[in-house]
Structures are given as C-alpha cells and as structure tokens.
Image 1 (cartoon, rainbow, N blue to C red):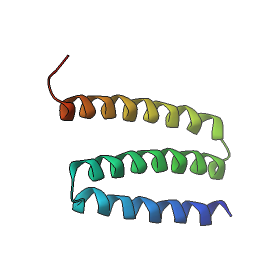
Image 2 (image 1 turned 30 degrees about the horizontal axis):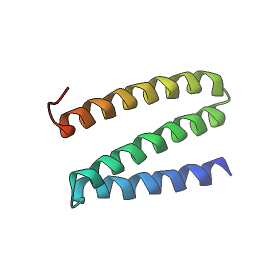
Image 3 (image 1 turned 90 degrees about the horizontal axis):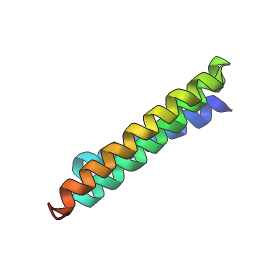
Image 4 (image 1 turned 135 degrees about the vertical axis):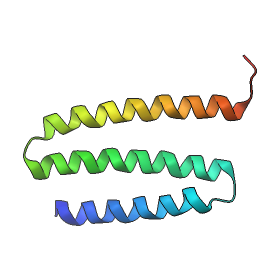
Length: 84
C-alpha cells in the first residue's frame, strides 16, 4: 500500500514539475514549486516507513520543510519588490 501511495506522489510531483517548467505565469511556477516541496516531504516520510526508521526521516523532512519555507519567503520578497 505504501508503495502505491509513493507512486501516486511521484506522479503528482511529475505533473507539478511540468507546471514549473511550462507555467504561464510566475505565480503558477511558485505554486508548482510549493506543491513539489510538500510532496517531496511526504515522499521522504513514506520512504522512512518503508525503511523501518520513520523517526530519522521525519527529522530530515522537517529540515527540508524549513529550507523550503525560507526559500519561499526569499523568492516572495524578491517578487514583491524592494519595499521594506
């Protein structure tokens, strides 16, 4: 069951990467990157359950989530302009 869910998540990541590369606007590309990051976190945790050590993979996923959040804030600040 976990493998089937992982394959579905990989399919969604593929569709979102298509949106990232072919998105008509910058906001579509940002949305695609956000969904890809979230699905990657889910994929890391599911792999942890397959490996039998989910606690280690949850720590890795949390670190990845923090990096993704900081990156999103930086990109949003850049797209929003230079006003402080």
